[in-house]
Image (tube, helix red, strand yellow):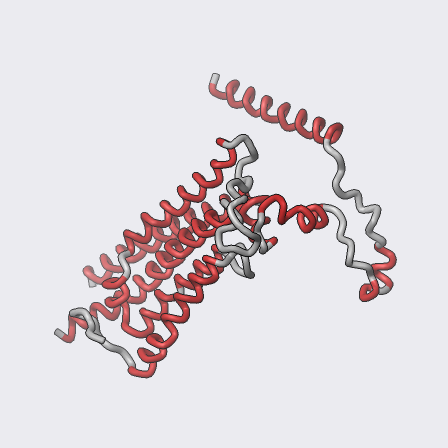
Length: 119
Length: 158
């Protein structure tokens, strides 16, 4: 029974993911398809490549950042707003790393002390 | 400066160096945290800079002084507190009907002011506080293994 429930929930998640991908593909406008990037020019003469007009996500963030977040530092806006979920993961990785090293180092210290007592 | 009981002074040159650099390190780290949304920097970087004060105190005054001045358990609790504040601020967006982590309350000043960027600023502070206490705790933990020898030497001398 347990195994059946697990399989069922995995299948539901998979179906939801596929539906969301389909929806995005059909209804959300593509922000960047690479057609504006002239790779040949960039390869032949990188110093003369026109970088004054960015495209894709960079274009959107640079042009609408001040209206959306009022943060003068674009990087801070990306880290804490556009990619805030990523920052949560990063800080919890730090928390987990510190908890793990605390557990390991405390045990190591105790063993060292025991060894010294024996000697 | 009067020292607390049980704190032994180390080399004068190292101690003076630590005394001289410590205030600048702490103040500059706090500056980087506070002005993270206005100038280059942010929570993570500033937090690590403030946490390096642990190492400076250790270099100047030894392990015992570091544990006397900084309480390890308080740091551990405050790290979790910073994480909780960050998650609560990120959830503000959901209550106001927008995305998780989306910036809200940002219409409160001109661009370039300290708290003009709404929740981005406060989330930066929360992450800074979290990294400050977390990395400080980690450094103290590493010094805990080094500091064992000092204490035993002192006991032997007595």
